[in-house]
Length: 238
Image: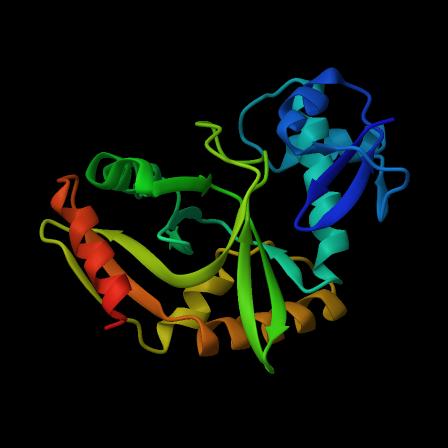
């Protein structure tokens, strides 16, 4: 048996294929027991192929089914999957979310070029975000997971979320506070389920997220100056 820590919870993974063990190696911990035990059936593994246009081997599909089950469990623990690239910069996490193909990976690579070792990529695609109460008000913590997109950029780390950027392509770089579109946009970047309890919890989570974490529209091109525009706007809290 093997134990792993994701979003401050210990999981025992009973996987059939070695792929998941290799994928999660950096998150393995020594423990006598787990908060949760995860095992997926052959039917659950094959169900993942229905959600993916490409044909993938069962070992990879098992890893997706395991993460889906982890996310299902954590949703009852004030923690949700968020489709975004998350970096840490000067002790705070910043999330860049967009429709697939917009350029999240390209943008965070510009941060790496601009600011070097000051930037750490917590997760390039599918981090976990937990709501917790600190000094009487909600704050949100971003966690790395090994499920992080085809570039596999992630680290076993966490940081308090300091801002979220709704990323869009633009010939000129700009950053501005978002309007009422923030909730609708962010809802589309979360894992959705046909379950009333789950959806009620998710909507409450999102309501606090947009209330306590600043959300921005970020227009960015592929020039390194885009990273400076984003960084300056986020730190100023415009």
